[in-house]
Image (cartoon, rainbow, N blue to C red; front, side, top):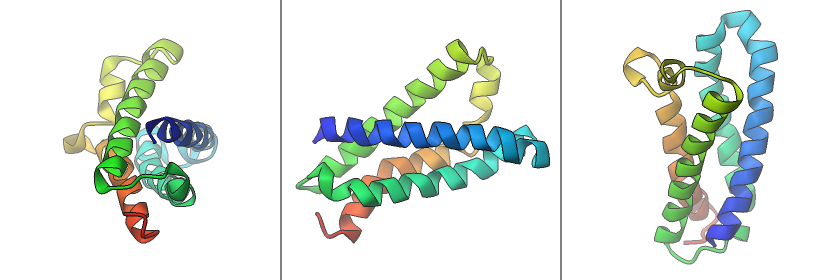
Length: 130
């Protein structure tokens, strides 16, 4: 099941990457970088839920723990991906990366990661897979 979870995560990351490009081209010029990143968390969370809903039966989990482990795997891989992409590919500072995770100053990424963590379990319950 975890290997299937990795495949779904690759789809999520691909879609989220396209979403990030669109955010930069459309939202940032209209509302600025930080506000665009805030709005994008909610759009990204919706994309994660839709992709998870479509793929949850294919994941073939048999119990709640299976779906929670997939969500945890997704969160860990996403944080790693964000750090690698931000630092190595985009050359962002640690402060810039951390700003997305700073709830006290408007960074909403932890909310998106919570959606990602619980989406497999929630969608499995909706699909009555657990």
